[in-house]
Amino acid sequence: MLKIIVLAILAVFVAATLYVHLRGRVRLPFLRQLVNHSAWFAPYNSLMYLNSSVPSKPYLDRERFPELDALRDNWQTIRDEAMQLFDEGYIRDALNNNEAGFGSFFKKGWTRFYLTWYDDPLPSAQKLCPQTVELVSRIPNVKGAMFTRLPPNSHLNKHRDPYAGSLRYHLGLATPNSDSCRIFVDGQPYAWRDGEDVMFDETFVHWVKNETEESRLILFCDIERPLKSSLLTRINRRVSAFLGRATAPQNVEGERVGGINQAYSVLIRVGNVVGSRVKVFKRRYPKAYRIARPILAVGLLVLLLRWMFG
Image 1 (cartoon, one colour):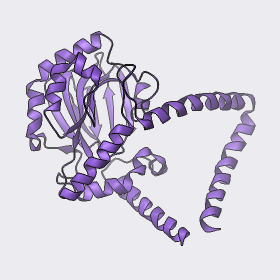
Image 2 (cartoon, rainbow, N blue to C red):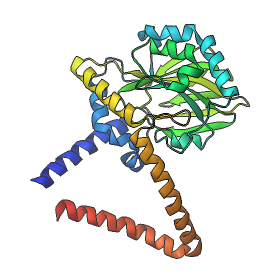
Image 3 (tube, rainbow, N blue to C red):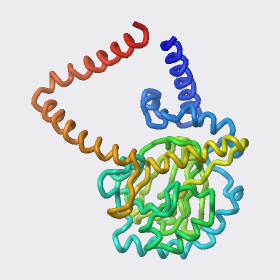
């Protein structure tokens, strides 16, 4: 009986992952999609897509969210606070490798400063950029907000964000104002401009290229996805709140860090130790390394199949 339940859960997971994978024109390689963190939420995300009250397309009509006009109308005030933070060195990467959601971005020079993250504003944000925090806090469906900077001649690789309970909003603050600095959502490009904003579904495959000599500084927000069902809306808010607490970030030492981010920091440290030893083994015994990798993978697969069907 237990095996039947496990197989049923596995079938739902695979079907939902296929649904997510086939959504849109641009896709990750299927094997990568199966192990990608976006697959973990595939059943939940499928429920969000099927009950969404906004169209299932890469870019959404920003005018459907008139409450965000307050951010666009005050973009210069927001920009001034963001520029001051940048000048003072606060827009930076994670202090202690404790940010699971954006860990790979830091390797490309991407940096950030959080305003709020599915909870109350961060104390550092309230102190250092009070006007922006006040503007963001007046809009209930803004669940997370930060300043993000991408340096010149940098890029972010193709990826899906894992959670479909929200949508993504960008407001250009200090950008190259060039078609050579753009985001591609499901293959469709958008180039940032100062004072202009865009709304898109970040669970489509997307990537970024800044092929200019200037950095790109924007306001980056997670906006609650509108749903047809009031029950699902309440559920989504509870799920969002739970995930937000678990992934709580910090701008400065002393601010609370969520459990997932704490665990990620430990895994990074352990991974660095293990990885360094694996590299030593690979360098000293390259033939043994090439033989051991597939043997280990097959062995783990056999153990899994024996547990499921044996």
